[in-house]
Image (cartoon, rainbow, N blue to C red):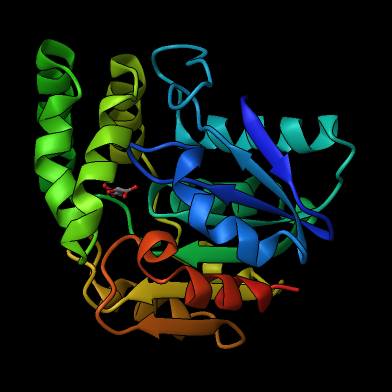
Length: 244
Ligand code: MLT
């Protein structure tokens, strides 16, 4: 698993969303480096991380993260995930609760895909396999941020992702389980961060998670879309500091 490590303090893993890589956290780093030992992996098949095999699930990505942390001699860490990275963070919380110091859920949800969404993912996966990452860049880059100034950067990040990694991630997201049952049992510090102008995952999903997590902090960001780390880095960093 390729990763960047920077800063010092309590370990905090930041897991990027789909179909992006660890470069997406860049604007957050200056605000967090003096508070956290930051570990920024590229998830399997994205960025510079290899895809171990064709049917690599989000639970496998969580297991790979646990291996990475053990290899770094970090028995426990805070784990924060954005969107698909949040699905991986929830899988990590289910599989490795003893390793979790805190959980950050950024523009994500506990619910699984509906059958309709699963079918759309399979269709997109087939189109990406045939035509390349431009298919998802065209569909997603204009919608990810509420600030149109971010579209070109997002398009660039999407276009640099390897096709097998995008195809695998689509299938892995479609196959993810419902994480709702997990939430009431989580006792570690939890920060939920969600843009109120998120065009991909509605803010209701964050509120539903909060209703099952009375001790969690919920930061709702007015005017912010699906990319709080780009659109509101200072507020996103402040919310993550609540995990300390
Ligand atoms: C993401 O931003 O990681 C994805 O859009 C999440 C999803 O498609 O469910």
